[in-house]
Image 1 (cartoon, rainbow, N blue to C red):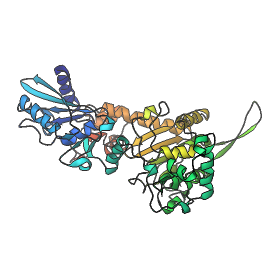
Image 2 (image 1 turned 90 degrees about the vertical axis):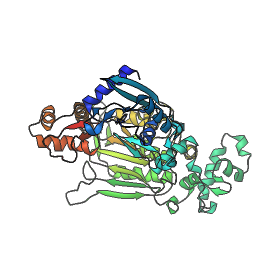
Image 3 (image 1 turned 45 degrees about the vertical axis):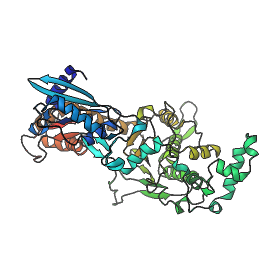
Amino acid sequence: MTTEELIEKLELIQKIKCETPTLEIKSAEKGCPKHLYDSLSSFSNQDDGGVIVFGVDEEQDFKEVGVYDPQDIQKKINEQCLQMEPVVRPLLTVAEKNGLFFVAAEIPGADITERPVFYQGRGRVKGSFVRVGDSDEPMTEYEVYSYEAYRKKYQDDIRVIERATFAALNQESILNYIELLKIGKPKLAAIPDDEIYELMSIKRNGQITLSTVMNFCPYPQAYFPQLCIVATVVPGKEMGEIGEQGERFLDNQRIEGNIQEMLDGAMQFVNRNMHTKTIIDPNTGKREDRTDYPITALREAILNALVHRDYSVHTEGMPIQITMYEDRIEIRNPGGLYGRIKIDQLGKVQPDTRNPIIATELEVLKVTENRYSGIPTIRRAMHEYGLPQPEFLDERGSFIVKLYRCRESALSIQNEISKSNDLILFCKIPRTRKEICEFLGLSSVTYAIQTHVMPLVKQGLIKLSIPDKPKSPKQLYYSV
């Protein structure tokens, strides 16, 4: 950052009067803040990094107060950066404005293989933070583990399950799998079966692995009650809506068995709860039965959840969730995106595989192709059906797929999202209730605030200038 860019940053702060996911503000008028560790950690643990600006007092309405000593504060910032693991290397910039000195510390995002970056004094679990809105939040134990699992290439799908025995497996399924493995592989076929069990991770040091339990055990839920699918049908567009007779769910099923059986059971559930239209082709006169969603897209989305969910000890108590709403279906699996891949890269680049043995076994069993074709297949199937493209979300610890059953529903939601985004941009400069009401083109100030602003406040996207007095006539609303 140049001195000119730091001056521009100071001017921006005076306009927005708030912190952001990549901007932290510190006073430092009387000394260097003693605890920068949370921000150093959270900025380092996100791709975009972040900037800490010293010399602005948030408690005095973001007044520019300058730093006590531009030379000493740089030394103190570096001292705290040396207490991080791995060490943080900030880029420091000093600028003068109106006789006052200001310092900016640019914190680069660490490579994923070096995360989580944490404060040594608290340790990896308690000293790791993530940026949520404009605040630094402690990482969950699972978030810390996820980085470690990727860095050290843990294979949770072949961890040993001590309670499981070879006798508890479906012997016919195991023999069939071994025979399929040997096809076209003369060198493998020459190896005794007991050695193949170890070689192909059916066993590890003579003990049964998790992938074996999930694919070849008649009832894996005896060992892992929550490694299942919970499927529900909701009478509305949001969870919690009640049906005409007071029912919370129109259908509710716990789907168990091995991975292939859970896939079949889930497909039966969604088929049972979908509408089927009969369409006559005007050109050929042929009849076609058309379901709400393309079967191919549903199967791929559910199979992806079963294959790529997190099977670590941290998530073995979390089932996959399939929720059918009036206008969409959502499939949620424990474990966010794995490795370096981002949402906008799905289906375009080859991702890291979280559970390679499970994927390979299902490929041999002809359940999946294991060619990274699932996402493109879902997109193509939705396009051919004339439906909106699927929505993929990577939330803290979960990956979600949303399929919409009609374009109008998706467009309505997209319009609401667009309106919210416009409002967030409008509130980059703090706004009054009246200004927001006029911007939205509404006549009722109360309705505008309750309907459009308060949901964004709950999400942490918009903040109140006087949070202790939400009904204050001097209240301003600004986005973060």
